Image (cartoon, rainbow, N blue to C red):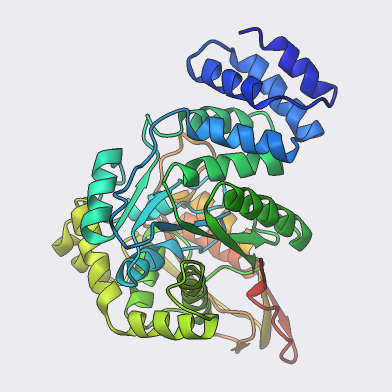
Length: 435
């Protein structure tokens, strides 16, 4: 096709038809439009935007660019998923997925990898000995039907348009576009054949959306379009100024997720897990109110069934359970561990999630580029939390590193993430709104 008129139309602020967008996506996936022309188009969209009809058409064209999941219709279990816009220490998906399976849902969770300071669910899962996240669509469906849950990544034949477009957006400074973000997220979620979706939209210095208003705009765009496409969707607006939990780093977050499943996890992590589960119970009419739904989710978590489901899940995906359990018993898996000690008395009122995320990335736990090799065992744990009283000599956090030199440098940076006050200051709410 001649793609130039579409670039010109969007450059000049004119709307494109669904037929034009679908033809363009199909031609690009087939290799018939060069990257430089699509890059120009993305920049035009970045500045001119897409209207609601264009965003819907782009989303559906991306969804239909490859295989979609088709689950049996005679199964009473709703098909649901959760999506987060990413954050530091954001491990909610790991305990949430087995909990949802135990609550009577089917959970075909298609996740992503981390880039920069944002940790990815797939990277965390792959820190488990033997586990694979490469599940063909038919295997993902079979496993979800059999045990209620599967956690994998996009395959070559699922939503190929999103893979191509995201890689190009990442290197052309066109990622921060609400229509493009919406199409990217929902093309994947609609390909799962969902009945309901809960969105966890972060905002703050370590989040993709820096302000609450930006997060609200994105959440509204995603939820509105998902509902229009037949997926009952709700969104939580979540503060990402401090890391979630006390650990950041792939294996360290897996350990903390298991602690959550065993009833010993951090309060903020459990809150997000329970809120996501409760919302899906209400969205699918399995509970009549959020109060009842929270009680149901808490009782299920306390029963131990989600912890057993977790082992069933990772074993189904090839994990060596003996090696996994042995690794859980270790204090650390990284070669060097260093405690960072407070030199100040006071009440902690800030733990800057951006600084923590940059430390983890630079230790090797995150990516500078998509080709970066992840070090699964590095990171930070035992993090002090805002609101806690800290005495001189107390541990602010532990650095897990490959070398002593790396650990010393990271410890010095870690201390800059904390700010103290002489008296307790009110902490901002974790969940600031529900849409």
